[in-house]
Image 1 (spheres, rainbow, N blue to C red):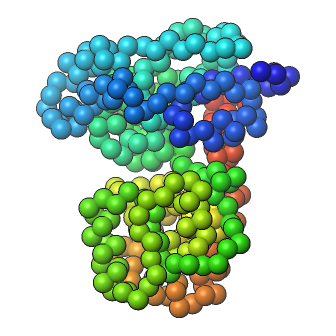
Image 2: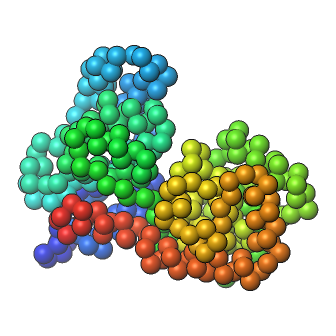
Image 3: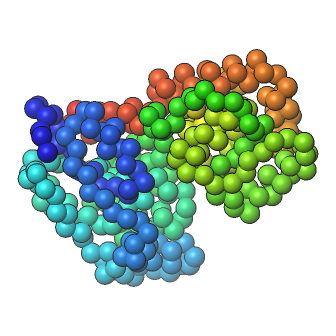
Length: 320
């Protein structure tokens, strides 16, 4: 690997699904990626203490922490082309929950990006098994959880999700759907989407899963994209839809309201009736729909790409 002169050395420990982070950090630093597959058997075993705690709150945390030490022994990373003492930043990104042996990176700032802490099993896994206490800084994708991490004496910062502007982008193709939802169809989502179909049986819809480029094409073929969060969080979908310059209708929550303006960058709903009313408005009023899609796109492209997040990490860690 050819080294960029005067650039920082960043060790990224991440899942293959977050490959875009390499590109983002590579804009500002020499990047040394280390991939860990979160679906592997070993990775699943790391989550056992967290799942026990999530299901049995009274189970002694001390015993689960000991179990975490047994099932999640510190991983020694083998990185080529750079010496451990030359690494300036070690950045580990959820869904990786392996405990990393950080001792040899004595000159580096160690940071962890907690993304799935909205799920109790993952939150407890990060506390009991991953040992986020080993890190200098915890970036958290969900603001309400910052206080939980602060209790462990670690510096915490809110780092919301973003979108890959090289993947999620406007495409000049004909609109095919009136409304779409792309994502895992949980029981709660199925119930809501069924009510949408019952209320608007004549609409052309797509409700289901799609991945990366197929997802982007579906968004670009949609007049309105619906977001249904799992726990009232600001998720990846919000940024990805706006990055495709599509009108987004999402459930209202504090995180969304803190980042985006309702009626300007997107539209929100707090009840089923409000969802129906705003969906009708967006479908009937093309000018309103196009205006919201345009202003939402301008907002995310200026502030919320993965490049913005990488730059913010380097700023907070004071290595950039």
